[in-house]
Amino acid sequence: MWKLCIKNFVRTSVAQVGISAVLIAGIISLLIGRQHLVKQQEAVKQTMVAQNEHINRNKEFFSAELGLLFYYLKFSLVNELDPINGLSIGQRDVNPSIQSVTIRNLENQRYDTDLYNPNVLHAGNLDLSFVLLYLFPLLIIASCYSVLSADQEAGTWNMTRVQARKPAALLWKSIVIRMGFMFSLFFVLIGLAFVLLPLSINYRILLFVGTGMAYLLFWFGLCAFIISLNKNSSTNAMLLLSCWILLAIILPAAVNNYLTSRYPVPEALSTMVEQREAYHEKWDMEKTPTLKAFYKVYPEYEKYGYPQENFSWLWYYAMQHLGDEESKEQSASFMNKLAKREAAARSISFFIPTLHTQHQFNSLAKAGLENHLLFLKQTANFHESLRKQVYPLIFENRQVDEVNWKALSVQKFEENQHNDWVPVFLPFLVFILGLFGISWKRLHSMV
Image 1 (spheres, rainbow, N blue to C red):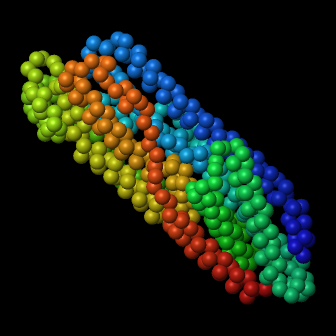
Image 2: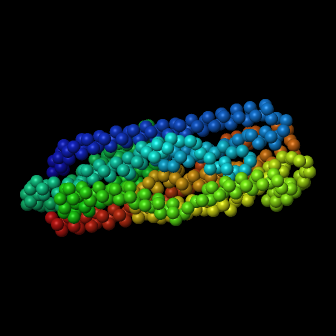
Image 3: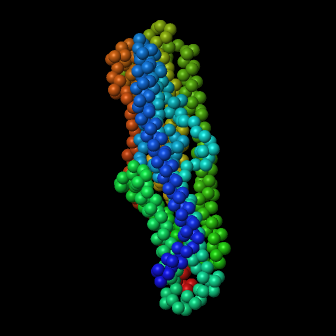
């Protein structure tokens, strides 16, 4: 009976055309993921070379005055890339993985990003997470919607019920066979990912595979539930496609709209405006109040006194720093609202499997908003560390040769947050057990 069911499924156009199409899309997605990783890795290599060339070139022109030299110099922080990011690009295609900052005011630097083609951003990336989230469910729907109704409409189901000792078991065999093909396709793509991408077996990749399997099981559970309603094929197809549109398009758009309106971030603009105003107005103020305010933040620098000349690098960098200090409240509010958005999205996603899967993929690939917020925070720490290394050298009018340039090389940031498996799989477990449990009971009572 198993062989006959397998042969019947293999002969369908869904098996021959649908699986081939998704396989091709999956291979293309892996190639796009590899291209993304290569591009990011090449950018990091170029940044390391460019920073050394940038420093050496500026040292030739501005070596006489350290304050002027550091006015121009930029130093880079790299958000390290996990190879699994090739499976789920997430927000890494729009949020910068490299931040290059000067020791001047920070707030108008750490939100800079590259320019991108808006048409490309609108279409999004065809990575493996996209194939799993959107194409696999359609293939599952196409293969399962007529498991029972096709025999009923062909008039062969009554004969099957009479001849089979357990008709319901025959239905489950058909569903299990389709599961086998879909999971085989999924593992073929994962196997190809190990060939095409520099992946290694670790905790994150195991969670990624487990999340993908749980997501596919959810869709099989939903198909089994729709089948158990005992409707005709067209009704089953309509119901399942409606569920796909609701879960994959409408609910994510609604949640995004809700979070945008619930947590607006006008501080993104006001922070920059406040910082610039706070900086520029210092040009028209007495220098002593600026230095006093600076020494209040950094009392260890008060030993450098209050220069009376029209211009000094001590006063200039104090003025730059106070621009950040006076916009700190807006900056903190901006970061806090983005963190609340992320927390709210994570909580809501527990009830929407598509959103939960996407969130977990991005989290495992270190490609979500949470990772970007951590990187922005680390950028602020990196900028502060630069200032503390450089300020004494500038204020004491040291020579270029006295700077420890090796300590000012490209730095790297790596997110070390641990992904617990319980919040990853618990929402899936509830949906899967509920859908399969109801379907099992209904199918056995119906046949």
